[in-house]
Image (tube, rainbow, N blue to C red; front, side, top):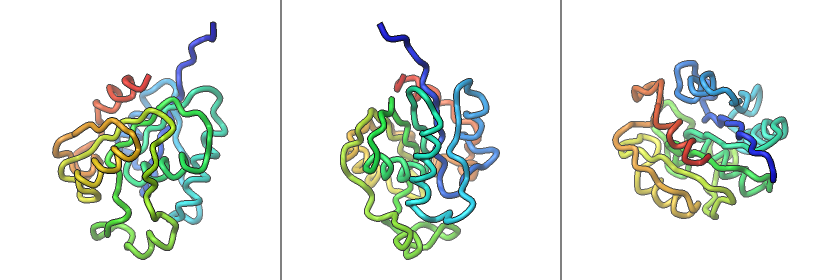
Length: 186
């Protein structure tokens, strides 16, 4: 009988990378077996560079992995899943940013997103179990668009209610539901 190995929880942050008071950063510090995709030094808006960084972070981990992605990190995760075949135990995909729709002021322009390879959003089923957490009032993605993505990916959709973009600006440092959803993937 194979021994049970606890998965490593790998955080996949969005375009703002690591924010000290973000729930992913706080969760990584609290979990005994967690890591994060490191921030990019160059090509910060490049989808290909971000996917490569995720793949490099995964290459450093032996054993099972659960991906915990937020915002554009969700898009990095689904892009990676279309290009690589490593077995993933599961993924928590929180507040996906709809990069096919212009983002609010303060975020990269629609043309810059397009020029950096983020289109189209992959719509094939993911090859691992996944849970998508969707906000009813996310300025970066409508609930209906996220609901359609979750369906296409074969993910279980969790309606998070009105939590904005689930980030510090929306009032989230700690997000206790993340651990509950990760435990469901275990």
